[in-house]
Amino acid sequence: MMRVGIASIILTLTAAVVGALAPHRSPGNIGTKGSTRRLASAATSSSSSSSSGNDGGIVDVVPPLRRSPPRNVALLVEPTPFTHVSGYANRFNEMLRYLARAGDHVSILTVDSKTPKDELPSVTEYGQSIEHTQGFVFPLYEHISLTFDLPEMKGARMMERNRPDILHVTSPGFLLFAGLFYARVMRIPLLLSYHTHLPLYGREYVGYVPGIEEMAWSALRFVHNRADLTLVTSPQMKDEMTAHGIANVDVWRKGIDTARFHPRYRNASNMRRRMLGNDDGTDDIADDDRFLLVYVGRLGAEKRLKDLRPIIEKLGPSGARLCIVGRGPQETELKEYFANTYTIFTGQLVGDELSAAFASADAFVMPSDSETLGFVVLESMASGVPVVGCAAGGIPDLIREGDTGYLVQPGDIDGYVDRCRKLMTDGELRIQMGVRARAEAERWGWEAATSVLRNVQYEKAMVNFHSRAFGGFGANGGLRSKRASIWNLLRTKIARVLGRLGIPGFRSRNTWKEVEENGSDAMWSPTI
Image (cartoon, one colour):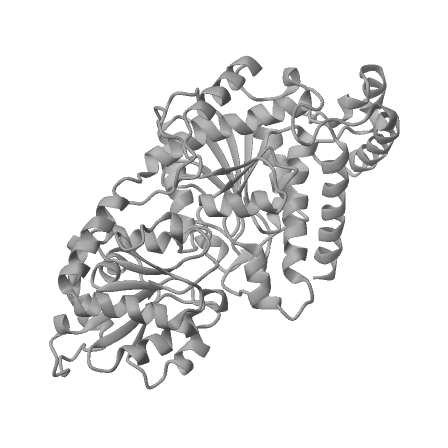
């Protein structure tokens, strides 16, 4: 563990040095397909077709899925979306489905220390290869695995082998440091997609550390300002990132499988009775006469699930019930906290059971203020179930207040009680709001989201990459001429050491004559 810790520090520092000093390679040397002119044209057309309304600049006119020619895409993703159940996992699996339909070749690097090696998937159901690198269980959240891609550096070999046109890396995490390093050293356009709001998680889990939220923002600025494009999952999150000094931020369109999450699953396999804790039928009130609230998702402190107990208690014992679906590090604590209340824990559900759990409730309640989007909110809406959600993070992007659901300020218990009571006492309101929520969810398909991703946002990242390669047209610009010789010397020394160590992507000693003949930039080209 000590060895991994030292290596991670070295990797982070090296990424910082390379990220700050290494200019991008010129357009003639990169592996991206197509000319700068075509990329600039695509960026211009995408810019002109975006709106500044409630969707925060989301493209209005969705291009055909196959508008751009097939590309090689490298995806570095943690935690794994293949054995980790969440809305985040759904997003990546749907993305891979439609990238495959578009003809893109995707190579994937991920980590999973919780699953036995012989049970790890080696290929997606759409044919993309999956490589697993060594990792560790995150001590603050033992259900996920993270990695620095050390000591194996499988990502370097994967990119050396496949020469990707773009590198897509998830954030926050530790694998993104390796991704930043590989992108800068191998001259690959870098797109970071942001899925967990780090400052709020820092506040919830290590809030005793003074200034932890600003430290988190500093780390995010350091990393994301070295990407060619950052994707977030809601306009609200885009505004927050921009306000904290992060450049080149765009919104990754939301999507939902409206066939998987559908009102037809209501009470499938007697799910409603199970959620009410009335499996044996001994409750003297009919199942349909109970008002059933549901929460589906991770059971962690950042979700503010303890706010739900006073809500249930204030709604009264005559009809309101709560069902909590999912698992997480706070599960045992929550079961004790909700003891002697009308609350049922089902554990994690998948497939038809999960669909039935969404559709069988009367309302979905989401107290969390840490959601970058809130896929479970969209899944509930697709199931025809109105949501009472927190007016924070990405949730306001999903709900039209009083029309498709309700929004309540974080921690406003009386506000939640008031909205829930409206739905509990007015069955017609509840039904009509659920119908409108379903109609809203049907607007958001995964094919459209992936089409914008590959035809507009990947293109935009490549344009930004080319812009910086020409020495200063992007926000991060080129090196100042007075410092160029000093930085080139430093880069030469770093690359020479790494080449002697045999690290993929750096030239070995017997190629330095070629470096001296062709100029210092040649040392950064991968040896393939």
